[in-house]
Image (cartoon, rainbow, N blue to C red):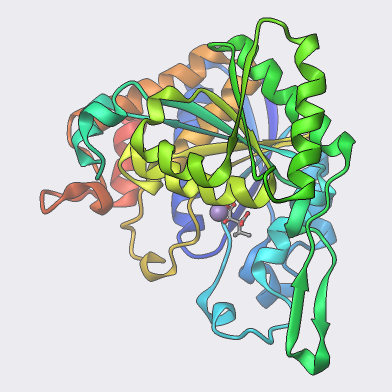
Length: 351
Ligand code: IPM
Ligand code: MN
């Protein structure tokens, strides 16, 4: 297969973790006779520094023309401490999601047998966890009307959803549930929020089209609790943008490190693959970050191209590395910590 992949390394540890995913993908391409054409493009703070814009038109053109986008991380502390900044790196990511129409973010959470005791949660609570949070990605409070009034002393962000936006996300959720254990949980705050009531009503109306799927409806605050109490009781979960942002960070704790969890963002066309972690600026340039979330995001990409064996080969190599203690600092717990690049090299050798 011939693949054109847009490569957006972004900020902080982005370039380092992306390098490992590229190495691993190239090794897969070599082994299975594929050709990958990588098309690097600027985004985030790196793009602001270069051209004054976090998601330049040129980058969008490259992403649109590509078969998929592989993305590193975005964000730089110089903007976090400057609330008056006119352009922020994160705006690049939001613009990209919107312009590429990536309305669903697929964030799986699973455990690795060899890491089960690295999780701060007890083994018996997390064993067998294999869930997917489908987060709505181009609506809600992230994209609502916002502003200041009262000479800047009052600020507001508004949350809006249309029935269509809920429907298309829920449809992905039902379809995914059909390929798994046919359990779907709609996470909302329908006891308080009107947008949540629209979510619930829309999902309820769709139930008849998927008679095999058992749907539950739970409030987000209760889910935040149950997710760490009994994560293995969940399978596919659907939720709005902000709830999904928060719950997926929380869920990543189950696997043992945020540096392990991949994601895919999907819409109608080009899909995007990225680790769920941020740019981890404290580690930038030190070759210490965990590259596995990005490597596993590349595995999700192969899977979506229907290259299942290729995806599995990556996962097998990752599992083997973890079982053999080839881990980065976040998982080393005082033992030997391997460098980001060493882990990439080890994976390549084991593919
Ligand atoms: C994520 C990140 C982003 C988000 C930020 C960087 C804008 O936290 O992908 O989860 O909030 O969506
Ligand atoms: Mn987040």
